[in-house]
Image (spheres, rainbow, N blue to C red):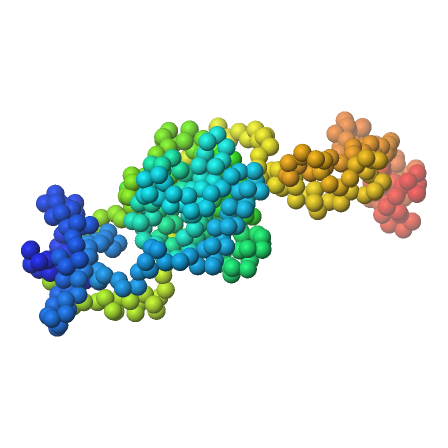
Length: 464
């Protein structure tokens, strides 16, 4: 990686002096970026040290700055055979879709041959879910390009990865699982979703919240702020069925200056997506085909033209530090603020969904029905024709009779009764045969009695 490069027609170019916000520099950059072929750009260091063996380079944006990069020799050919883990996960997704009642196609190709989808699931209401498994490295432009082709064919892409630093994260609708061996991917073990699926949460900005107000950056405003919180406990099998049923929809949040540093793709429920769009007034959009909108242009560094190539040094630093994770698992601010005088209303009871049917099935399987609770014709198996997610109905048991309430006045009601006239303590002490300072309330009925001193008792004579 270097900021100096040799062009076969323009000569030496100092990329650090290019200001992408300037029209002239931007015009020069657009004429070179993505339009040079192998052999147009040459490394200055290699050109000086070994002119008989040139090393070709290409242009890219690194942290918003234009740089020149050597062609990598470690790129895997697209037609390389699939790994066993890739094949196992692909068959797992197809089998899950068929169990949920949907048809699935493996290696579905487009009529024009531009697209080949790992698993194509035909969902409800004509929904086509294009499931892509990406366990190896794939660049962000290639992911954006393939997602744009899938959308142009009427597909809703769903990318699955097991790498926290995969470039496809937040650049396409994605879901991340843990890195599992082939045996676990095949035998039906639960694959927990670690990222990519969010829930809309409303948090009160008051003294109980340890985070300052996100709008004012200080203090508390006593209003409600919305956040996208990660969904916990969801499995990949449940996500496939829920997305095919239309219960989870993709939501694209473009990068906005001063609000979001980079774009984000989320899977959210249909209700949360509608609430977010109603609160913000935004319209659902999709990224432009092949566009990676988080490469924000940065200010030029204006470094002197250097003929030193730091490509090998950059590789060593990358190996030593490791890749930077793109999936941090943190909650994302939504930008929604609801005034305190209009508290969020309670959500209406949702209709029976795919996930609720799956949960009912697991609860019914873990709760055995005793023989005395079953009728003469009832069995543990579901009747013929019943979908697999509907559990057998248990017989209704008669409610237990409630015990009669004791005929006692509670203490709270005693305290709410009007106070009785205050008795004469001296006359009561003479009648009880004790001193006035030895008179006190009974511990049970609170009537005055001989409580303190010699012969005193915490209970009155009646309570004893």
